[in-house]
Image 1 (tube, rainbow, N blue to C red):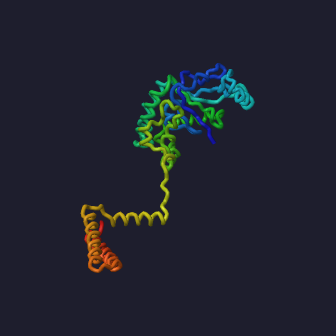
Image 2: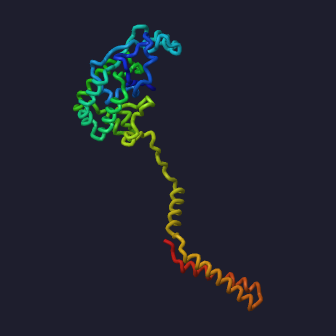
Image 3: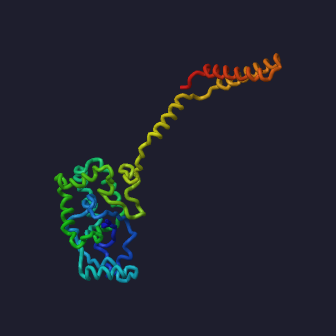
Length: 292
């Protein structure tokens, strides 16, 4: 089941409020990343516990948006007008400073091979986000009760020297089908500036794009071996090959015509032709030698 959380670019120092119709101008400005019910490690490096704030569920829908009227009514019925959930917001300058100050500790904890991914994430945030960085958590199944979880995850970023903190993450990264980009930084939800960049995808391939090789059947193996044997037993034709072939034809034809001229017997001439053709064919094959 999908429980998406989004790391979004924002020009506001808070969550947009539907009571002010602020969602209509929110999307399409800067980058956005998506994860599913987890808080990627690199996202944690952007924030501190002081960045936790609260928004009302009902404010997820603009009050004047007719297309969201049904969802807004359902939200009122489920949560009421005042129920709130926690989210994270920070200014871009502070976020980039935290990323830089935490870089070496994070890389030391997860391994040097992930340095290009971390530095690529820093660069992507720097160029693709507006003045503020917003973590939208409303998609979590227990969004109203997510504050303890958020605080624990944020606190863990400064305890990376404790191996137990990253046990689960490192176990996930070591799996054969693990996507390091997804596990550490989420996936880009904005088409304007792709994340990950093509260069990073080369370094950290998406396991879903790898086509498994089908095992060969015994019949395919035998067919392949026969083809290799035929290839080994053949060699390119040289100029000698056609000369020998034409010489054999000429000799067989000469023997046939000579026999007919002396005997005037078609059957005897035909018999001589067959014998000459067989003998000369065998001789040409021996002269050309084995092909290797």
